[in-house]
Structures are given as C-alpha cells and as structure tokens.
Length: 397
Image 1 (cartoon, rainbow, N blue to C red):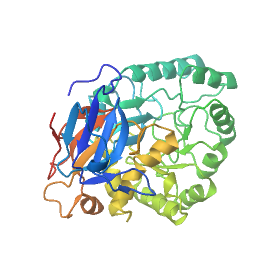
Image 2: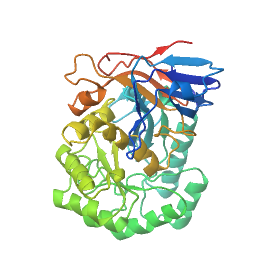
Image 3: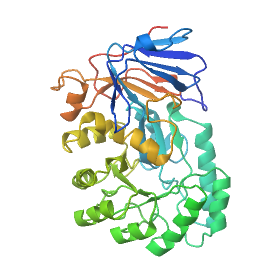
Image 4: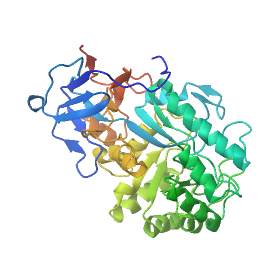
C-alpha cells in the first residue's frame, strides 16, 4: 500500500454488508445488533440490519463474509519523530506496520527521540508546531498521527501555552521527560495548558530515557495531568500500592501500555474494575522505545487484558477504541452516525483453539486482520503482520 501524501477521505458511498459481529467500542453496549454499515464522505451515516438501512447509490461495496468489524484501534501513547521513521530503532515504515495491526490513530506523547531535540523554550515550541503541522499534512499509510506534543521545560510561562494552542497544538508530551519534574511546577503548567484546551499526560514510574526522572504517585496526583501516562511504567513501574493510590485518588485517565510492567498493568485494570471505572482505562504501546517497535502491540494489549485480566473480549476492544476516543476527545473510536469511518475487519486466526473471534481473544490469541479502513478509504487488505484469518472481507465493487 502506497503511503498517503496527505489527508484523504472517501468521496462516494461505501456499504459493508454481511458483518458477522459488530463491535461498537462502547463499554455500555459493546456488541451491536447490526450486520451492515454505511459511510459517506468518510463518515458513518447508518448502522443496522441490511433491510433497515439505505444501500442505494453505493459506489463501493464490501462483503465482510461474516468477519467482525470494530472501530479502528487507537494507540494512546507513541513517540514519533518525522514521517514514518524512528531514530530510536533506526526503522522506516513503522507506522505503516502499525496500520497492519489495526491501528488507525496514534497520539504523540512527545517527539522526544528527535536527535538533538531542542530544550530551549523557543525550540520546544518550534518543534511542537512543526510536528503538529507535518503530521496534519502527511499520514503514513493513511494513519492519523496526532503529533506536536511539547515536553515542558523550566521557564515556560502562561503565554507560551496560549501561543501553542493558537498554533494548533493540542497535546503536551509526557510531563517529567524535560526539566520540569516537581509536582508543584508541573501543576501550574498543566493548569495553563488545560486553560487553553491542551491535554496533558504525565510520565509515571522510573526513568526511561536520559533526562527523564522517577515520577511517583504523589507527584502524579499533585500535577493533576489529564492522563496518567503508562501507569504500569515505561518501563519500570511504581509499587502496586502506589498504583492503587493513583486509581483511587483521582479521576484521570489510566493508561496501560505494552512497553511496561505487565503485572502492574493487569493490577491497574483490576483496581479500575473494582472501582467501577473501566471507562478510565485506555491502551497504548509507548513505542518506539528501547524494547523496539510493536506493530501488533495494541492487539496484544487487548488479548492480555482479556485473557489474563479476565475481561470479556468485546470490552477489551473498547479500551483501545471508544474509551480512548472519549478520553482524548476524538471523532473516531465508536460505531455511530457522524463518527469517522475508521474500521478494522477481522476474524479468528486459523487454528486458534477459540471457537470464534471473541473466544480466541479471550484465550490470548490475536485475531487475523482482513482489512483496515480510514475515513472510508481502504488502507490495508489482508494484514502482513497478523496470523491469517479464517475469513476475510472482499471488495465487490
């Protein structure tokens, strides 16, 4: 699949029929009574049974052949640099490879791996604005990368955040990866960011790269960032008692990542469930990182949460779709009219011990992806990275 030079949306009418299982992305009702979805102009216009939706005037028809459909996956925590290259691992094409793992949207937690990353305030702002503009104009493989996440540094003042917001920057990189590490310093800057509509994420746990530091539960609570970034550590986790403190002590997002401590991640999931607050849990990979690039990282997190976390598979998919969309205020991640037509079609991997897709994921197996669609445009056919599926969708017209 050729790389997209810029944003592209479907111009005609797409109908996907014969869907065997419709996953909504919504924890309240994760499975929908529907077998057909209609999209126009890159957005969902109808969902339901074939007999109840308007399929006239179709310009593109996809027969799902009984495959499951879910919203495209959202990786809540990545560290891009420019284009589809990561200097951390010296790889090209890593974002396109994530597309083959069902990821349609990525959210930057800071462009921290840029060689010679500027630390002065002018440079910090310039890098953020450049990254925001670059990824707005260029989508590797069609994936939507929400880039431009400045890492806050000592000396920044309120007007800096106003300037960033006015320029289109809507994210802060991980608090704690720069010179601002104390809770009281971070709290002031996080509040300024929030005032101007910029969402914040804080590093949690031990240091991950040179210049980062240990961020404990007290600091996280005092800073009051919108997202508790990698609550299970990136890579080193806090003691489990501190993770419980974070889950109980605030109502912010609980982000669990692939490149963290698995026991801590499963424990955070359990604490959120005990609190009746699963809607706070979102998933990321925290990659590229020292442990590499994980094209199937979000699928693996879904399987981990379901199999070892004892979470029904249909709910586990919500952690990487609807939960993240609502927490991050995105227009994708849920199957409902008006949302972006970002879909993943998949089925049980061949020879899985699970009897169907959901049972196979609950048993820890990854699904086989047959097609990925972004803004109503087919971006990936049968995935080159997942195991082959029992069934795959077919483009009929």
